[in-house]
Image 1 (cartoon, one colour):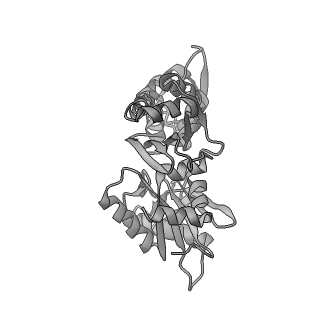
Image 2 (cartoon, helix red, strand yellow; image 1 turned 60 degrees about the horizontal axis):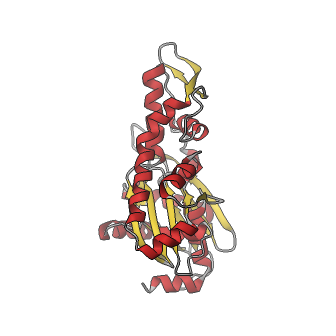
Image 3 (tube, one colour; image 1 turned 30 degrees about the horizontal axis):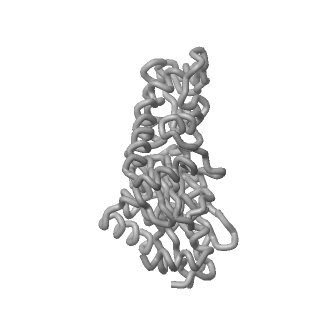
Length: 328
């Protein structure tokens, strides 16, 4: 399959879907969400049009890069593709990320959803490799590299040697688990209802370290007793405690992944370190925490939210690399 013309790279994330078109870069970046009418079940909004979630049932049909509702995922992908690649006689060929620990059944489901969404052909790229390429890692050499991708629903940790994935771990829990913990904290302690967007904002402002003790972040929400909007100063220490469990799970999984690597790769990692991608990479203090536990350099990708899409796009632009990967 040659990748010519209006072909595209599709980053199908649990939080956002991004589309990269040859020669243009990322042309679409929208939430991976659908809103359906509560009475009829009819879809009334996709992506940015559905992000508010008002007046219907909010559905997130993708988790961890895989469809959890095949029909809704198909309709959402088709909608997004037609926004940027609509021609009545042309179906695009796609480059997509394949989660490194996905099962044969999950891979088949992902392919079927993509083909049902009007794909003419599909090239699957290992998730970790695409993220590494998008983060600017020199994966063509045989040295070890580590990628930690903290997404909405899961965290994927991988060690690569050249273009091969040597060790991988998936943690069931990412940014969404932290946001939900903050929502519960604010409701139980302050009787205030906040949405997950407000919780995410508080999380990013607070980070993973709560010192000094008197730091606060302000959150805004709805008071169900008075029916009014109000704000409360939320102690950073409380946010730290609420999100500690998912953060600890990520750190522990990263350490265990390194421990499974051959000694020569461990030495490479001690020099080259790890790169953080995904929305969770924006969490303040996480890099320092990982650096201390892993005893290696840890940096955040320059464009952490877009790293996977950029890596898939790079594969699409580089025909030689894509052909090489397809032969595996």
